[in-house]
Image (cartoon, rainbow, N blue to C red; front, side, top):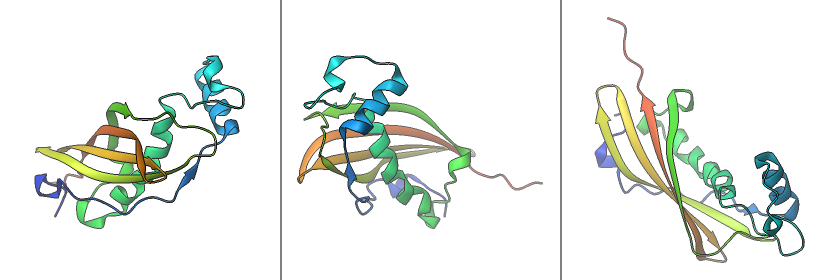
Length: 141
């Protein structure tokens, strides 16, 4: 059965912890071309969109779930929002847990909203909400 609204609420086991480091923060900020001093030095915080890197690690469970019939190569990431409780910092071991929030099906198009809760030491630091558009394979007539 392909993904459907009945899958909303499905939660997957947490992805392995991701260790944030000053080096990874610096690399990400450099890739963005962002020279904000908050992203450098001993007390560096990660740019807000750095959370997407960690959230994407949790997406593997979604695409590995054979029941859903999702294929990464037929998926487009269309929307992303973040809600922060705390910034991500050097030394944080971030655990990402994915939940399917909403599914809408229109013909061969699936619109899937997923929420990834990023926790540090068991406390929520960031909630990342993404909307994915997925096209199903259509059998040739």
